[in-house]
Image (cartoon, rainbow, N blue to C red; front, side, top):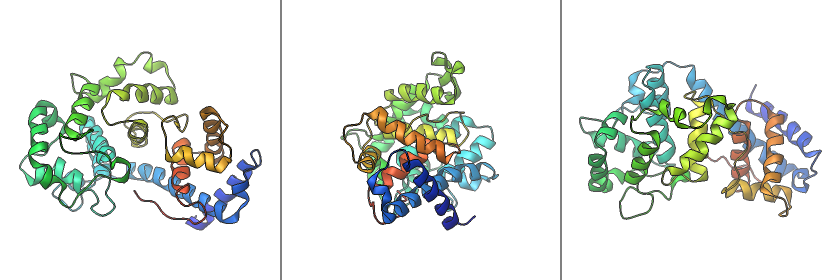
Length: 306
């Protein structure tokens, strides 16, 4: 199926979804085209994770000195190599640093690769030498930032200790969240009744606990846990779009509904209904992502990569 055939199918589902709501905006062909295209893009972003899961990558994707370096692919390399802690660490760096529109993965390459030094800042090395890592960040932040930068979702983050959400403190709090044994798989053992929950309840339990990590508000927690779930490290999935604390997605669904009197629960239920109609895994993230990007340009489709 090509992209345009897929978009036509999604447009039909959007029309079907709107039967119950009669949103005036969705009767505009340009709006419906733009919204449907954003849904297709969001579906493809989710499916990209599942495609990578089927590939056996070699160690070059995890080498920050290689042009093949990619933290998401490195996550799968480490996961397939039974190095789960390093796989989680790659996902954390992938989400926390993001991919810069101009400089790509350079920020993660500079940090993880120790600016070309002999030893990478692996999970094992960082956890055993946390103060050294924080000092290294403070001392080298100018070099680290050269030809690099945080991605769009993390643009308010900082490397330096003089600003809020500096990376040293963020990593420190993340390590504390993981626990004294530095084993990501032990996290779930400390959450009440985790094993008795379904995949949505497990996601929510972790979402609440991640509030202890500095700089990880609603978007950071949602993105991190979705990435962990999509990469197969844990069997978790969001059961809602998590609109509380959201900006873009909440603005988008309010604009689409044309009604500011509804509650957060109402808006989430409307989005969940579309996610159910579309089907597939991580439907709530698909709808959340699509509505966030659609509200930036409602009448003309624009691809958003950040």
